[in-house]
Length: 126
Picture 1 (tube, rainbow, N blue to C red):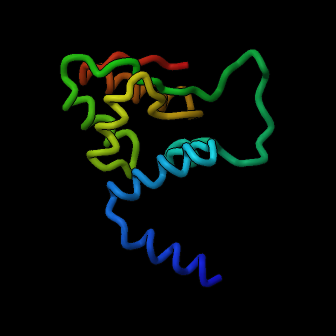
Picture 2 (cartoon, one colour):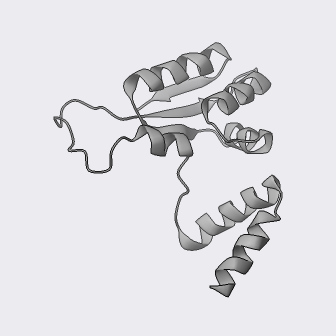
């Protein structure tokens, strides 16, 4: 367990920028994707049975472009996705098209879409 303790100590001493770069490198090396906390909380109970196949109950909010008001869009992204710092939100917006929220309820997806479009972004709900 000494290695785990050392690793936790190292990670605890990182800045947000360093931690963000670490997560990206980890995702690339092990071919995994870190899920956003909002998407995990909104996914519902783990053992829930899926609804009828013809009615979709989970939606993804995809930022297609930031438009002319990139700064406003970054602010809204930080508001919608809890836990994002300014750098992470900026990277997310500049990396469009990107999923902002994944597997959320229809009303949450529509609310996020409305906020982003009001800020000037082009958004799709899938």
